[in-house]
Image 1 (cartoon, one colour):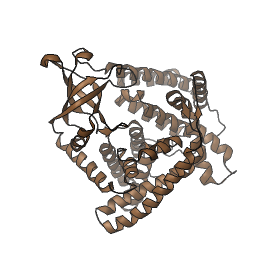
Image 2 (cartoon, one colour):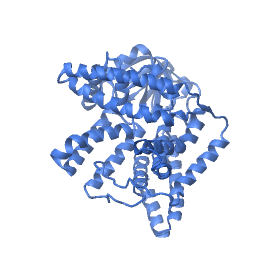
Image 3 (cartoon, one colour):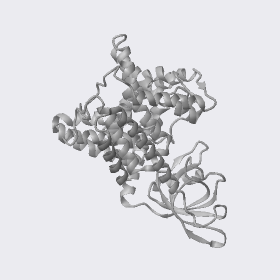
Image 4 (cartoon, one colour):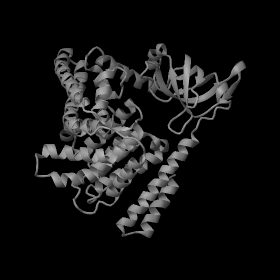
Length: 457
């Protein structure tokens, strides 16, 4: 893959050193080839069991992620295979990744061990689960912990459990855990459903918005005492630790890569004012890095929506901003323009995968996103104070309870607005091609103003 990337970049530089349109066409073709390569890599990672799937009675391996609770109450998590067993104690070496559904009573014990634990589960594969849409699924009947995770993973799991323990018992704790750690096990299922119905489910998925809040707090507390470069380096370290604490999530990983590229720009290794297409170039560079490091991530919906949404904000969003600027207060125009860009860029994919789009999210997000941002900052403050002054933490918690109630009422109101059910694929395909054309050939009706790569500007 790195050799292919070098060849592609060299080809662009040699063949079309000046033509922007040609560079975009070749860039699109290169992106398609990278996508095909990601899909091939994903298919190449299809589990090799060594035994016929229908004869497998048990699988063993290492937990590749923290176990979580599914909608039916069972535990679930990806398992990196080491071996399988069949009838008559027949054993075989295996490799690949399998999505395992654990019994509900085994979930607390698996959470205590967390990612990196070696386990053996008995059960059977779910018929017809070995599709391109994800790893094969295995329904476990019993779970055995074979080996605890390494010390580093035990420390990480201990920190996560300590944070979740501090949040437990508060009415707002489930939402706090979802926004800070991406753990939705304790999130009120009714509230999560309301977020989806309001077209704001992306707020609950850790992404650039959440990382931007963390980065802003780091910049606020560190820039003056340490200076720009030292604060940027320490901020990058904290971001890496934060992502490591949460675990790999495509949208969060994309945001972290872009933050790290911004840090590199602060240190002088990348231009901080790369021109009108600077933000798009940064996004493209982050895509190349992420798809090279983790090709299989390119097949996930969150990965696709994350890049489409930000591309829409940087292109269509800026176009709408140039039209609406001066017609309404800037604090409304900017987020509305961004929401329009992200919505149009992702509408086709959302419609094709979920069969429904919810335009109400455009307006609901103008209220829900700022409230959620304030809630997230307050939750971090309450969490920090809980280790220092429980009394002050309780005072902040009272404010969070009121804010949680306000969020609940807001998403409940927005959730009453029906979405648009989409049938068929022709309209989604046409819309996808139209949006791609607008993103690739926007002309010059506007100028992109967010040019700085530095995370502290």
